[in-house]
Amino acid sequence: MKNWSMNNVESLSDKTIVVTGANAGLGYETTLALAKKEAKVVMACRNASKAEKAKQEILKKAPKAKLEIMTLDLSSLKSVRAFANNFLKTHKRLDVLVNNAGVMIPPYSATEDNLELQMAANYFGHFVLTGLLLDVLNNTAGARIVMLSSKAHESGNIDFDNLNSEKSYSKMGAYSQSKLACLMHAQELNRRLLVAGSKIIAVAAHPGASNTDLARHTPKALYYILYPIIPLFTHKPENAVLPQLMAALDTDVQGGDYFGPTGFGDMKGKPGKVTAKPHAYIESVAKKLFDVSEKLTAFSYKF
Ligand SMILES: NC(=O)c1ccc[n+]([C@@H]2O[C@H](COP(=O)([O-])OP(=O)(O)OC[C@H]3O[C@@H](n4cnc5c(N)ncnc54)[C@H](OP(=O)(O)O)[C@@H]3O)[C@@H](O)[C@H]2O)c1
Image 1: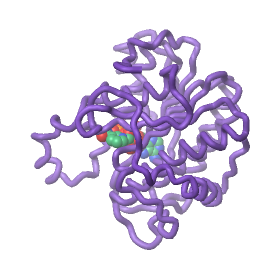
Image 2: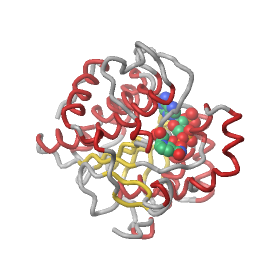
Image 3: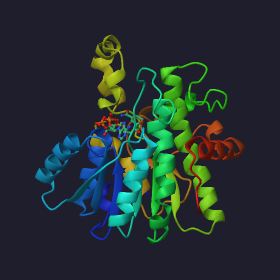
Image 4: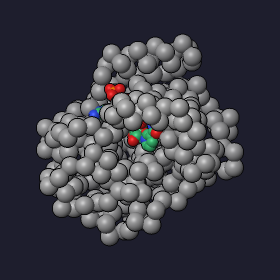
């Protein structure tokens, strides 16, 4: 749909939506937009006090918001499993899972599961989370899964010999790989869901560029050099979330679709359907990535 906006969206009062990383940046704006449409939003956050602060801010802007905080640290598969158990015990439906949380270019670290941090938090954590929530998604008519990718996927490469930076660590290389992995996962998962006869659709979105806390690990000097021109190539978080909201809510969305801004350099502007770089559509790589991810996380999808 051209000129898609939240004005096109009817009440979401019967919907339950999980947003990961809901306390800050794009997750916060996504939660606010959904709350204004009366959706019940489960704020899946790693830091309970930050989440509570965000919840209170949203309640000031949307006093009737139905918000629930549940702890989730995507860099720990134990935490991912605990979140899923908790969610499944307390909820009978899940209309949309918005896999939004992310971290960019931190110093190297390995998680307790022996995964590189960016791959763990951005990709592997969401990979397992999604698999654990498939049953409740399957039990909810019209359910969707939205993966957050990035323009950074363009320079990304799925390097099976260095997937978790076992050989060498490039901050940006690992980030780009994780965002390419999220994009490929959306497509591979959608194909597997179709084959399994599931009605769930998996889609992807990217926000273009927006000046959020994602830049927290950017060298300060670089940040201050770029600061005066940042508004030229970025848009405000409330606009940057429109592609992921469109992916989550637009009635014309098809499984495997990819959404992003359609203005200047695809970094800002109106949301719409976009095309990723060709290497993001190589099915043999996506299939291998899925299989390798099951092994590395010791988790198997049950379709
Ligand atoms: N901003 C952009 O220009 C841009 C461009 C392309 C793609 N993206 C993608 O958009 C998504 C949202 O980014 P943003 O710009 O909103 O960044 P942000 O402001 O830094 O917010 C990131 C959110 O993810 C959470 N998070 C980080 N690590 C986590 C973990 N291990 N477990 C659970 N939650 C975790 C953060 O929690 P804490 O507050 O506790 O740290 C925060 O809530 C990311 O996937 C990012 O890759 C953003």
